[in-house]
Image (cartoon, helix red, strand yellow):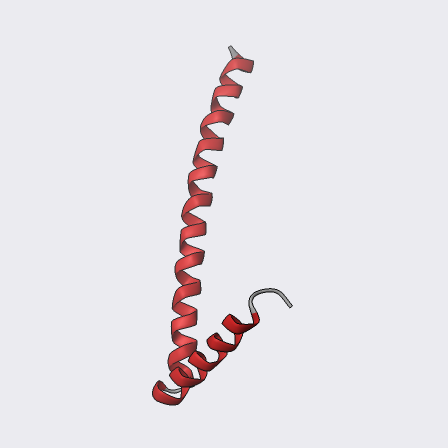
Length: 66
């Protein structure tokens, strides 16, 4: 297994505490929200890369055509 075993233990204990205080659904909701933020960030980066590639493609097609 990867990672510090003490941090894994601490994380597990914190997750159990949150689940006992706020319910299991609360923790799942927070994890989903975090993953959604990560996915949105990655999509934004990919859109930027696609736009740059389309500009470069247009430049190359202009060189070949002209």
